[in-house]
Amino acid sequence: MMMILALAALAVFAIVSSVAALRNDGYRRIPTDRTRLP
Image (tube, rainbow, N blue to C red; front, side, top):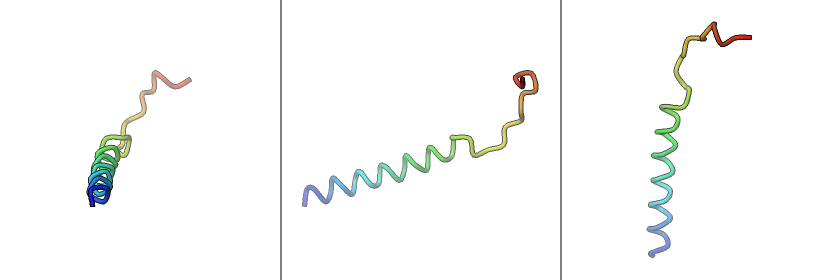
């Protein structure tokens, strides 16, 4: 039973951290900085 609870807690943590990473990991439009282009 303890193993199931630990696995469920780990799964919830993984889902929450995945959603948080998707929200701030480049999924918004950022204008291109023309001075940094070669």
